[in-house]
Image (cartoon, rainbow, N blue to C red; front, side, top):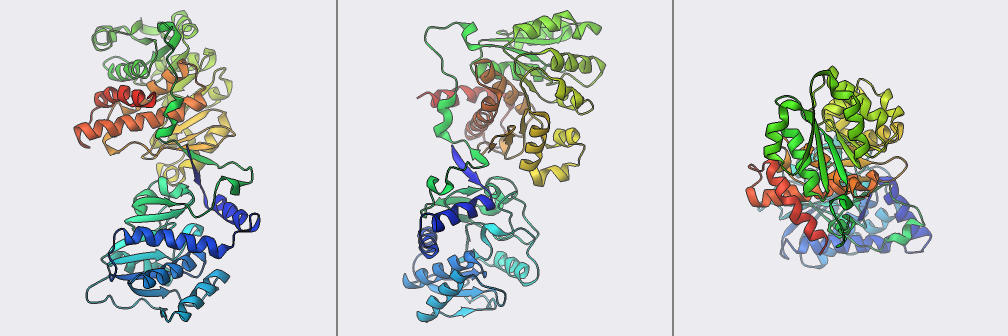
Length: 500
């Protein structure tokens, strides 16, 4: 599990390393410059012409140091710095060093040389940017993007928020971003993730000690975290691994029930009971013969039969494909008010709750919701355009307001937990953008919960596993042709990898 930081946390760690531990700022700066040069040298042969564009703060000072080291290693350097404005102390020192070496620093972007630039290095802003670049800054960024050559961002592409991933109208488009100490939230959230290119994290001497006991606000799971998958003792039976009740499907909508039930089984659950209309019995018996079926007809959907099913379960999935009519609304209300085991609310269950949010305050059980951005907009009574630039903020606010785990699904899914760090998912790919994928995620979350995990732990792990399964399916089928069933088939190998 790796730490994902925002700009304030990065400044906090940087300051502690300098002031508390006594490592001079210029030492950290030289390390940052050396790391960046190492990555440039891996791509550009000596003698190449490199443009280094520097701002007036410490990110610009990094750029000036990079220009000097590249010059010393045999590269042809054009160093440019934004004129005017207040320059940081370190920036002035680094510019003075360049002067001593006889390396000119221009204050206007020169005409592109005849052979073009082999590499363009962006050291204008770094992680501290909090507003759109304006005037000459914006013009310089647009010009840098138009230039040929390998594009390298120092710590963060200029014009991208390190906190939210928002990319302003003028934003540098990097081939690689060399970031320092930790990945930034804006490097894993979209659209900033795309602007960064490949992110390479460099160790410059800021370590866990620099936090002075403070915890980060975000984490991301990695392959090393697959050990968290629930273990399977040798002496066991199907009851050992939990019972999932999948309240899913409606007339002529059996697919969602099929996918979430199969996913729960694939993720290790011992028993799955599908609660669904009588009309789905034949197709579900064919598609998921392992499942128990509890079917209902007419207005009997939210009666004693449902209460009995709730008491049987160790975890519940509520909502995939149930519709939004009065019958589905009655089922949803009954589950939220009477369930006592963990409940994962997805799809139509969320759409029903968006009109009855007060029910969430009345829930007895531990809840997790798994909305995509459109469903989240309905829950929050906002526009999608308001949600997308603020995934972390939105998920955290809703999680804290209703004291539940909020899995806000997007290209980089965010999981927020009341009073705890959030998780930003780094697995998955565009091949997963297919019908049924969300039903599978709900099934994995419920399966982990049925096997004894708290929902707050099951949800981010399930999101990560789900993404790995999508990546594996895409590697086998191609990014265009993955179906939900391919993601299902890949769950087993991903979990098996985790227990090795």
